[in-house]
Image 1 (cartoon, rainbow, N blue to C red):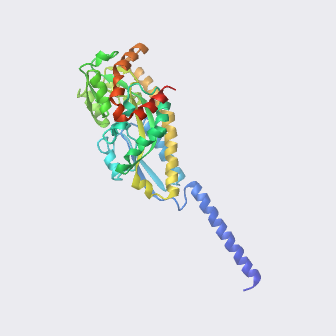
Image 2: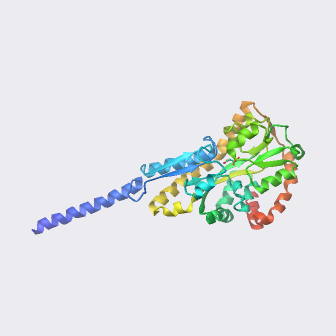
Image 3: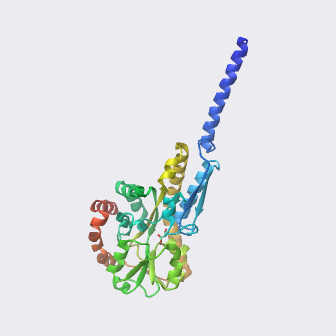
Length: 343
Ligand code: LMR
């Protein structure tokens, strides 16, 4: 073989090797790399489309599908269409679905520290709640489900809850006496109603409209976006703007699924969740404000907006709950949250 021919072959090989590297870099940037595993992941949740949770899930889906060049497909199942409150967690544990973003107060049975978002009148806004759950104590609580093979990834807010009921306008603590309210579940929510002389029952979100319509319970507490998107205001006569407890979520995944991904795939999915977090956090207040306007415009429900003095009455009556739950939630956790709430 002549020297010239060998040099030609060497250069040709070099060009081929370099162009292959270029392809792979480019493809991984566009998500078309061989490193990204082809798969379908399922995200199941219980609320409607016009909510911060669904908008966050959509942003996550769009990012992951686009950046993986279509290799990863994300299927979102809203409105309890695949699994409801009763079975979404078990199905995550079984890896039948890969993501859920449930209301944290539904996890008090797994860890009583999840009573946190129900501490009365704690956080004034989403940012304070985000700061708590992004911080050391919040992250510790979110990590506590690893014993079930479940990983807490990122907190998504919804917002403050308000009371609706079918019996009477509520503007002071005594007005709740004898009424029965649906709760998301959770000891602390029960304690709130007990303290106010009312009863409570935990009912899955997917069954709530019917329960309200049929008078199984007299009322419920929820965010404006949940009330409006599920039309609860059409089957309730009164709504008191309370902001006394919160709906906050975390995106949970199955640990085995998470660990089974190669680094490139996991990083891409992680970036998708970060995108979802950005949108859910940006949209929460916006969607709740819009939903409140729609509820007002509908004229379907009498709205009671409390004066600061009336809020103070509720706050005073419910204050002993902090002491009652000091050992259950942890004094250090409550202190960390109170610190943030003073900012
Ligand atoms: C509820 O059950 O009322 C809410 O927690 C539903 C949700 O996920 O926002």
